[in-house]
Length: 223
Image (cartoon, rainbow, N blue to C red):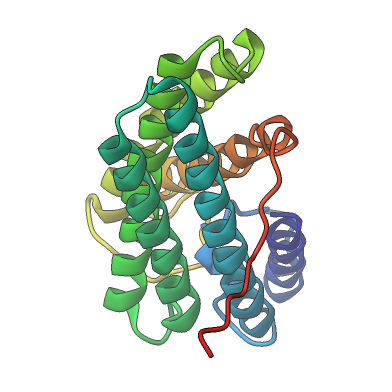
């Protein structure tokens, strides 16, 4: 997430330089990497983040699977559904990175919608499972943080999508306060950043959980 903040700062400086103005803009996440050379770094880091996210989702799945074997408080189907939703969300990130906003807009928007929608369902299911296993391996403070982040993401998701396409969808990146639909762009941009940061901080809550077990890769030869 730090790299996207840096790209955001670079995009603001470019806007100020081009417009010879200090009228700072609030960019959508994709706008920070829509043009070269930022787009190269945006695509690379998004792909890396997607693979890191997939690894985190799988690790969380294996942890919950082990907890199911011990206390059977969570249904295996719920854990598997959460796994696939997390993987699909990370795939959406790959689509966003591959089809950039200024190149193939419809594919980029589809990837973003896939990333955000399935990602939100994923953290909802994870929060539900956290409630089911509490107090085993989950503290009350972590449970409250996950619940709060989930609520933030769910609430911010709707203005992210609605305001991005209402009253009309546009690929315009540099906005001014007097522009038509500026308020919709502002609401969508702020909400999108809130959802993205909610995902990042939600993954941070896994840190203590991952300290409770060790994953090993075992190789078996058939010959």
